[in-house]
Figure 1: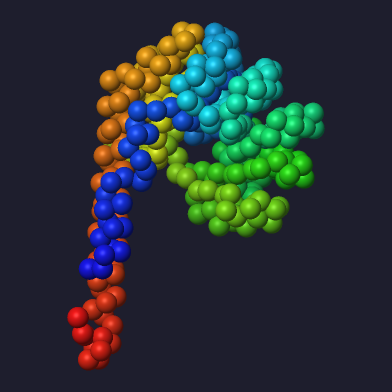
Figure 2: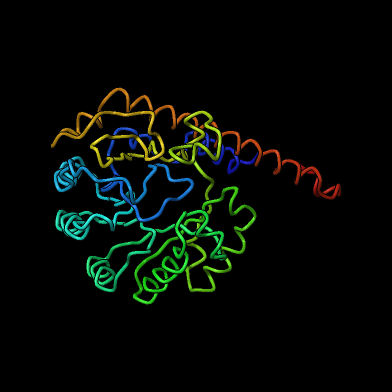
Length: 307
């Protein structure tokens, strides 16, 4: 085994990041409304046009409190964040405070030219989901006829205005085996291939009726131990948007620090960290096996067999 191989195994076995992230706050999800104009089959928050926003969270205070704790990255999500008429105000607050990365995760069906101009003015990143290049399939996933045309129109507007965009393709029964077609369609529109990701349906919210819930550490992506926290529309705080069964408490105005340093969050992050390290270690072992197999499957000439 080469020294380089040993180093790679040690790096992977120690986890995909630095352990100090276990105790910090670096990325914040803000679910600023439970309402949405779509009814997606897999929605983890079970949002729809019928869900009303009680508007009980002061999002400006959340931004201030998180910034005080060292957070510099924030994503506004929902529901559909553009349903909240104060979205631009929250974005402006985040920018004035000094947040360096601000992203809006939206279905892009409600993006007016005026709103897009605000996104560009504040240098916002946009994220969206896409389900199929077929109108019928896409609309079947969202539960709303015409959503395909509006989302595609939103993508075109964002691209035309040079606003940074990433797109997630969510795989499920309704659109199964359509990933390649989605990628070809999106890149044909001008979406950067490196900004297109593929994910599976999570067994959370309505997604729970589509896939079976396994262990929590296999439900989440494995990155939520890295200083991340989610605050929902009712003030409930979670380690991750997909870990709804781990409620850490509710935001009451200035208590994110208490939640961040709670034993429950530390335990959750350590559990996810250990799982990620185990997966990395197993991957390293597979790579080592492949490397050794390649070495010993090579030509058996005198030179190749020398130590």
